[in-house]
Amino acid sequence: MLESHLGVQVEEIAYWLRPDFHLWKLARGTHMQKAAGLARITWSTASSLCRLLLQHRAGDWVYVPYPSAFLLWLLSWLPRRWRPRCVCDAYITLWDSLFQDRRMGVAGGRLSRLLLRAETRALGAATHVIVDTQANAQHIHRLFGVPLERIHAFPLALDAALLPAGDGARGTGNKTHVVFIGTFVPLQGTTVIAQAIDKLRRQDSLEFTLIGDGQQADEASRWLQDNPAVTWLRGWQPPGIIATHLARADICLGVFGGDGKAARVLPFKLYMALAAGKAIITQRAYSTPDGCPPIPAITCDATPEALAEAITRLAQDPEKRAQLARQSHDYFERYLSATALAACWERLLAGGGKRQPSGG
Image (cartoon, rainbow, N blue to C red; front, top):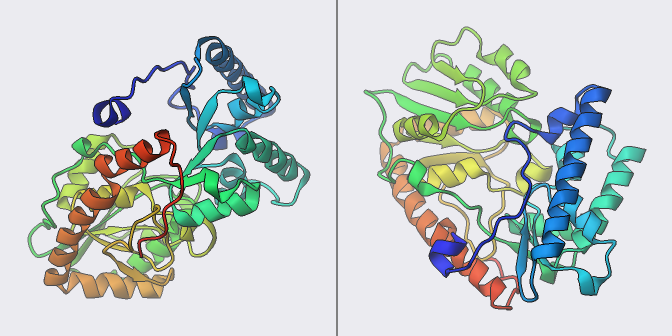
């Protein structure tokens, strides 16, 4: 996007981790697996740092992707005059991921405090910090002490070419097709979704497709078993499969994890649904990037009862679904597309770098 929209010359010097390497899986592994994983991270981070210090030139910007904390922590020990100008990806922070999203330990425990202190130091070494929403900008400011003027809530980068055209809802026959895409973790509220689907068992006009897996999948399965209206594709799916199911969707579901991080995000799957021009139901509490108004969606409380009622009402109102579908695609093009994201980066690289007020 930087190359095609802004003409920025991009040089890749990172040593990337394997695509199947996940920090949350490492945290749940054996002592040997943890040691091997940390050794791999240490080597790749040190190698990337050496290449960075040898190859960067004065005036260069350095983009540090997730997990940025490792490289930035090492950079933080260098004198400021030796550090390159770094823009860091903080869409996901290690502390939030391990102790809030996946709840893998006690938030006030020793390991939690050590990680929080290390990540605070790491983010402090970045010139600019990129997050996804205004609420997460405030969260990073409060939790890690990063000044607000250095935090920027940019849209996520979505390759819309991998998605179906934004041509509205296209159900099959007289059925209303409801699609959920996401990891089965507390943030997503997958148990709430499963319980809502269970409440709708007797509505023969509904069919559901769930795409994803995760630590709460077994809990959700208790409410989904023996339901002929449910198709569940567990595990990672390629973009083509996701695009196929998005194209068939009449309604796309967002997150229903309640308070906390669930209320601070606009998840990637909603970008996909907006780009594809779909009617959306998500929880009432959410946030958006800087300068964006509320998304065109039906919102409800993050409870099974409220979600079941919202699905029922929208399923019975095809005109409302068609209206939301048109508004969704228009919203994406104006506020979340590559063109909108490029404008954010252009302002940042030009030196403005000031956060915009909320658009709604």
